[in-house]
Amino acid sequence: MPGGRLTNEERQHIAAGLTEGLGYAEIGRRLGRPASTIMREVTRNGGPGDYGADRAHEATRHRARRRKQAQPAAPPVPDSGHGRDPQAVQDFTESFTALLEQQGLPRMMARVLACLLVTDSGTLTAADLVQRLRVSPASISHAVTFLEQQGMLTRERAPGGRRERYVIDDEIWLRSTLAAVQMNDALVAVSRRAAEILGVATPAGARFESSAEFLLLVSESLQKVMEQWRQSRAARSAGR
Image (cartoon, rainbow, N blue to C red; front, side, top):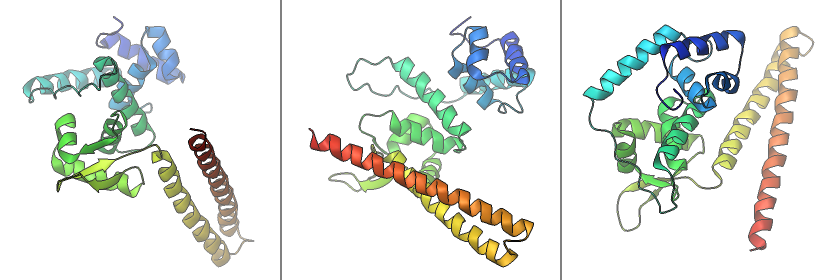
């Protein structure tokens, strides 16, 4: 039934829908389920290209058995007094984490980023993340290092203490895009160098030359978008 656990029959329908090339929204509509539920189910069980209904059903049963034997569930995230539905927040966090994974972010990095994004403060310590995600400090450290390298968070010292805390703000995607532009620019330079070495008149050299032209256009477009965003924010700040 909608809102409950997926049945084996529903998983068979999901597998059939993926084979037909249907999107998550259409599969969910046919089953009376949210698209986020379908996306989370598929992502957890091999992705669109490797989803198997029977295998997914058995894996879910196995995870359920493990959860029963595991430590108690993590305490709910404290509400900030905004009257939010804790279950709705949890469901959104899980579906957003699944989306980040689909975009190529490793699962632990996706979980840490989503956990930070749904907090009003945008700030958590390693201990906070360990408690909320029920993972080891080493896992948090590894994830934070990765996200910091991608420009998605920063570190700072907590006021009046020696603890380090991790921070995100409204410019998270700006910094991430800037990191992508810098990587893109490096690829442009390498591609141009490859075209020179291989010869632009050769198939391999022409391929690198074409790649450099495309990547340069991408960088220029992203630079314009970032500048427009900065100007828009500056205008809003000036109007307050």
